[in-house]
Image (cartoon, rainbow, N blue to C red; front, side):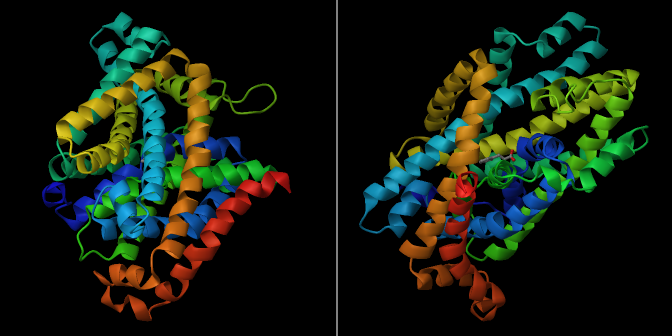
Length: 447
Ligand code: PHE
């Protein structure tokens, strides 16, 4: 039976690091700071924080609870909740799987570029200058090479399974990430120009607030916490029954938000340091150069102005990005792989290679059309599909699954929950407020 061979996270810390590893990724270190820089600094920061607390956190608890109850892949879990209506369960599960795969397809391209920027400084140090240049110059061949490299790393970890692959690697890699981060922040604040970036980050300019900013902030919150696409559902299904879900979710959300805020503390000052060093960051009309330009030209330029130390820092920074991306990409691939493994009884390794390979082909198509497809796929999958799927899970939890069942699931690992404030507010909140708020935010541009 497939279910008797299910993996499980072996320790509490292992789960938290894996879930936080999924949450912490390019969304935090790249998406959040560039969104913030593009949208009036502090104003975006405030709306984003509101979105995390008011919508994303309650939805994270919802997805983890649904997943742990189901003890299965997202399709299997939804079938269990929808006892008797497998077709709706399968359709929703498949849409989530498609969304996870779409995200992975563009994510691998971006992460591949980052890997190129991580390897290039090392090659430069050993005087392989032309190879280094090849890795950081936009060509189809290098895009495909780097995308394949990153995709293979993702496939390698996922086919090893939950405890041996995902948990082991997340536990190893996440602490390295934190250490690298703090070293870089300490460094950047020794540089002239950093304070200007800090001010931009912390002093809000409310004239930027618009329906688009609010929709973007919601998408960013869903993306950052890996919501909607079944990732947190499937990670929840590997969570032990004695874990306190609201508390665990709170820790994961806190780590994720902490890393995003910290990344802002690194990237925004790094931008103004680069500006101080003569690198162009804003165009003539005062808008930020594209976010790709920010990461792939502004930052490398900044590192270049630092001499040999810059080479080490560049390698460190981009290694950090690749690590963060890998602990996220493995959680995306886990969604379709777990469905294939349990619903179709496939062998885990074969399923991982076949599905991972198919997504890699999709990434190659994106590689050939980076200018248009990356933004388009990212917009459809993260700004629209993630929050709308989130609304679907809120409806599943609030309206399809019985309240008593939800309470029973949450009581495991938290027997006192029935008497606390959380249980008085949260079920009602997920039932009514979350779906209505998500739809209302999408309606904003039309009012
Ligand atoms: N949360 C990840 C990030 O911020 C992205 C992600 C989205 C991961 C959806 C899994 C599922 O980069």
